Image 1 (cartoon, helix red, strand yellow):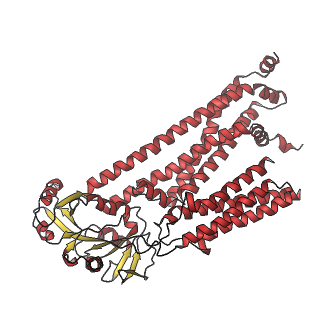
Image 2 (cartoon, one colour):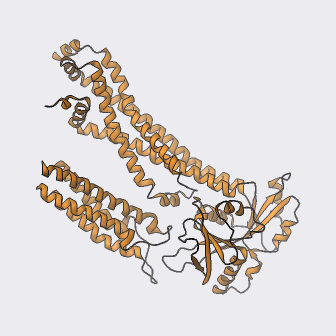
Image 3 (cartoon, chains in turn blue, brown):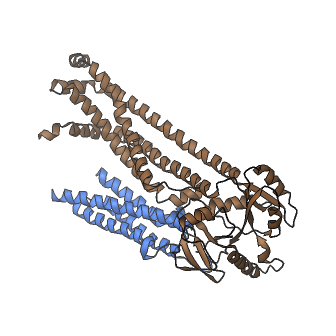
Length: 133
Length: 405
C-alpha cells in the first residue's frame, strides 16, 4: 500500500513537472513574431505526455490489483521514453547549445523522462515478480 | 526458517527495516554528504580546470590595448563569449610599435553577428593576423593542422558545425576548417578568422547599419602587445595609455585579468571546500551520537543475542553491517543524484557562475567518484567504532539483570 502510494506520488509529481516545467519552471525560448522554434512545439507536446504520466500515476494509486498496476507501470515506462524522445529526436530543441531551451529545458526533460522510465521499469519488474509468486 | 535468515546481513537489514524513520533520516544524511562531496567536487575541479584553460590561452605577461571604457566588454568576450563590436583607429598600431620595450604587436577585430531570429544568438567573430599573432596562434596551432586562410574559419566547441561545412555570416560563405576542443571560456562560442575577412564582415555590418563615416579597413578592436624581457609591463602600460590619437586608450594586463577571475573563483572554491568538510564532520558526529544512543537502548537486545549463542564478533559485525548498509544506500543515492544534476546541467552551471568552467577529464571524474563514495561510505562504519568499544565492555549477565528492574 505504502509503496503504491509513494510510486504514484512520484509519477504524479514527475508528470506535472514534465507538463508544466517547459512552460513555467525551466521554460523554453521565447517565441518571436518571425519564427516559432522547435522547442516551443516540444513544450506543447510535453503538456500531453506529462498530463498522461500524471493521470496514469493517479490511477496507479487507486488500483489495488497487481496485474492492473503492472499494465500501468509498463505504460508509464513507455510514456517516460516518449517524454525523452520528444526533445531528443521526434521534435527536438534549438540547435545552439547556448539557447535557454538547450541549457535548461532539454536536460530537465531528459532527466525527468529517464527517471519516469527507470522507476516505471523497476516497478514493472517488481510487480511482475509479485504476480508470479 | 533457513540458515540464511540468521546471517549478519539479513538481521542487519531487518533491524534497519524495523525502524524506517530512523533509517531514512540517517541514510538521507549520508545522501546529503555524498551529494556534496561528489557534486561539489565536480564543480570544484571544473572551476580549477576552467582557470587552467583560460591561463593557458591568455597566459604570459601580455598587454591588451582597447578603446577606453571597453575593458569589461573584452573580459566578457574572453570569459563568457558575450558578443561585442567596438572599434579603434588603425593608426594607433604604428604609434605602439614605436614605443621602446614593445616586442610584438598584433591587432584583433571583434565583430558580433546580428541576432536574426529567435534561434540564432549573436556569435562573436574574432579576426586575427596569423603573421603577427602571438596570443591565439600558439594554442590554436596545437589543436588545428592549419590556421585559417581567406574564406576559412575555425569555430569554438559550442558552435554546431563540422569541419568541411560552410557557415554564412552576413550572406558570406565561410568554410569550417576545424572545431576547437572545449575551453570552458568565451572561446567556446567564438569564430576565428583572418583579420581581413573580419574587416570585410564589419564593412557589411556598417553598411547594413547605414554607418557611412567609418571605413572597416581602418578599424581594429584591440591590440595585443608583448613586452621585451627587461622592461616593466606596468611602465609600458602607462606609455600605451598616454598615446594620443582619435581614441582614448585603455590597457588590460592579462595577469591582472587572470588574477581577478581567480579571486572570483576562489570564493566558490573555498565555499565548496569548507561546506564539504563541515558536512563530513557533521555527518560523522550525528551518526556517532545516534549509534551511541541507540546502542544504550539496544543493550538488552545484544544481551539476548549473546545468550542465544552469538559471539561478540558476530555482534560487532551486526552493528558494522547496519552502518555499512545505511552508508551504502546513502552514498550511492547521493552520488547518483549529484551526477544527474552536474552532468546534464553542466552548461547551465557554467552560464550561471560566469567563471571559466570546464568539466574534468573522465579518469579524474572516476577518481573523484571513488573518493566521494569512500568518504561518504566511511562515515557509517567509523561512527560504530565507539559503540563497538562499549560492546566489548558490557557483561551479558549484568545487562540482563539491570533491565529486569
